[in-house]
Length: 193
Image (cartoon, rainbow, N blue to C red; front, top):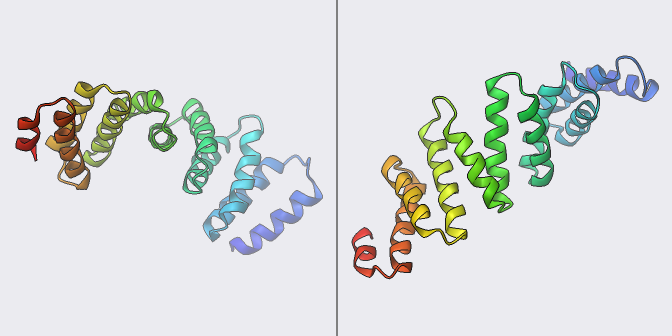
């Protein structure tokens, strides 16, 4: 029963703040808080584990902690946690989560050079699905567009159009036409639309 576990670990943590099992207590309390939907409490516990020397609980704490801060839209903290996860990941699931999380966090913070770098890393993930591939190409295209690299942006948007049937493809199609328009090729712009 997680509610009881949380209460017992809270007692241990407050009674023995420097106890020999303090890292484990915080991790297991964090896991129960996470299962109970107490994300702020879980994050506090995961952050405690992350701040300690690397242990068997670090990677899992980074995995869930980065997800929590991303969902809370604290992208600076998400980037910090995802970078640590990328460095410490011992399995491809964690490494992929870090790379995808970094791509999305950088996109949302408009750090365009990092968007390009991490979107390209996402594209190198083994067996990357169409949706994620389209998202990565779209992010690269938007980064290039923001840098006025119209040819590169257009090629990336076209890649999305060619490989996806989702809403992102329609938006990319519009951007392809818009770039033709920006380049003064009005005939091609109308043809694309």
